[in-house]
Length: 386
Image 1 (cartoon, rainbow, N blue to C red):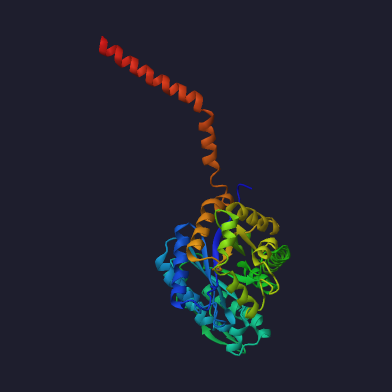
Image 2 (cartoon, rainbow, N blue to C red; image 1 turned 135 degrees about the vertical axis):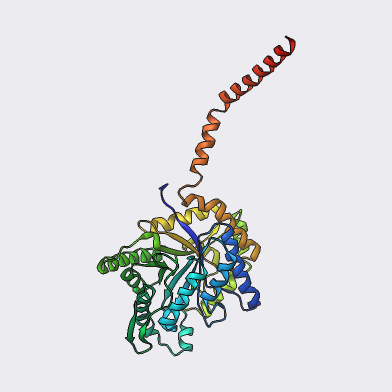
């Protein structure tokens, strides 16, 4: 499988404990994106949330505009904008501006809205979220391609609406739809021929669900006359690595408890059940996370690749703040140095081959080199004497 190339990145909600200074927490999120840019990570996706106290970035495109000024290469996506919360025209217009400000590094990730308390704050019923996402996405796709739309729905009006800017990205800004337990995101992404962001865990059962949703994506794409491309499929997982398994597990004492409490008390899909006595063991044994060494992480990513039934384009680490800041940065560095090359066309293959070639010739080449030196010394001495 030397020809595979698995891109790497993060999916940043973010998650910040209630006792933290929110100003400094958001700044640290920005520093993380800068750190990943230096380490040659490919993507960073930033979420939108408005309630619950933990996930405190309300406007991902604002964050990404600032990140574009502080990074050089990493691509920057909304992960994701909740379409039912916004008028499709103004949202499409903002994202087109971001495409220009980021010089084509921006990506547009969308979804129906996962945090039910956000929807409740604006009087939006859960039963309407997915319908509204599809209604909005239909319009946004047309707008982003330069179309003019007149449309009336029960929650927005478009009157000969057309954007002012053409995209900076050619032929268009990359887009993706979040897909978790229901097939709605798979159908929508396939229908429009755009990417899919698989969230909701990486247990064996979850991987089966992701693979099934990708099949649904392919069916929807074929029905709509669109091409499906596994390179546009991203799977989100958890990982934290250190030099030893013991160190990686010890790092969890910093923030895993707060994270687990949030998902038990607030989030509607608890990642760690409240009756679990050893969260680290639960996360690792269930396949939800890798907490260990770089070699453990390689095996974890291999499992995701095999579970996808054909491969996918990028693995995104759900940024979790389980470890303190220094250990967190070290984890991302260790993965970049020792895990990523294994999944990027075996990027050290030619180096190893070159090393082995030199090693095989070491004995004879060394003797030849020594003989050549002696010959020159003897020639010099003979010329000097004569």
